[in-house]
Length: 183
Image (cartoon, rainbow, N blue to C red; front, side, top):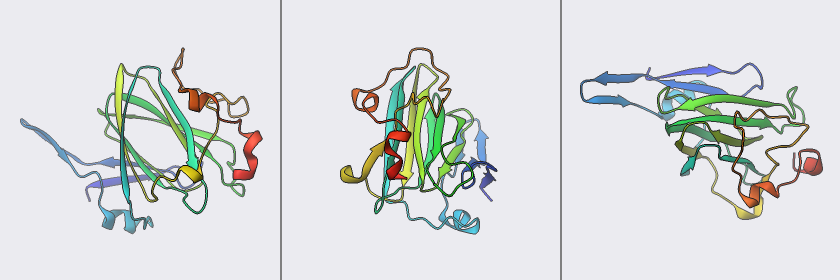
């Protein structure tokens, strides 16, 4: 097995994936995705789009999600630098509805986070810069794109940055309780 899957107890459905890394004098090699191994643990998603972003220190991207019929599952990894990857549970029937979870992803630890449908997603850049790549199982849909303000008081996310750099678009997103009909 080239990947180790660690299910997060709360919120349910999140999985941290650690690849087996083959290191030698030339560098390293690792498998970052194998559909057969994902299927063994019950993830039967066809990823249809890859995304790649670069951000400088203090940048917060998110919190983003898409609504039906174009909800997305994501497989996120940081290939350079370090980020705090954050999700918020939007599943109304979940015990952790409205709660956030964060995990450090970095080019050094090479961990990935699988995020099922029903979560808002964002991250903050903790290193001087970071590159993030992620797979999604539904295409981007402008009509179905939604978001929640990064600094929503109810969510009280600790992004681990002092002076966040946030896009005008993300600063204009509604608060969690303002858009509860999305969930």
